Length: 170
Image: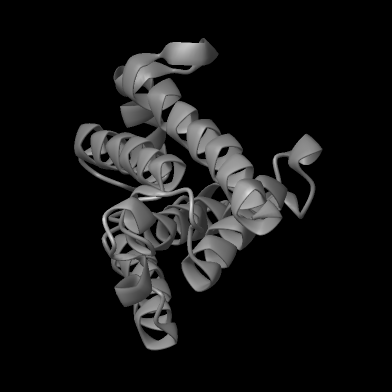
């Protein structure tokens, strides 16, 4: 019971934070840039057209965060987080080292690690997956690895779509 309650608290904190991260891009919420500025950022990172990539990223972050919060469709939400954070780490943060204070990959690693834990461990008893009776079907090691691989493959695909990586990339 404590494990399931702990998973509910962790999913809620993680999922809502990640959805809010996407809302910053999508709507300019919580001091975020909004889609227009996010599109410019995507363009500067080599993702063209920037508006399409900004929208895809923002809404993927919102949806995956909400899926995790609700405990629905494990491990699809975590796989999406892994993909998005892998791309962000590679193109925007790796050149700055590890720590977030310097713009490094620290936050990407933490989001990715938490997503991996949910993908591998499931959402627990207090989840929509459990309420719908699909948690046992989704609690399959092979299925979890396939989802994680899909997240990684999504990252590789997105990285392959970059048209003009910045010359100063590290």
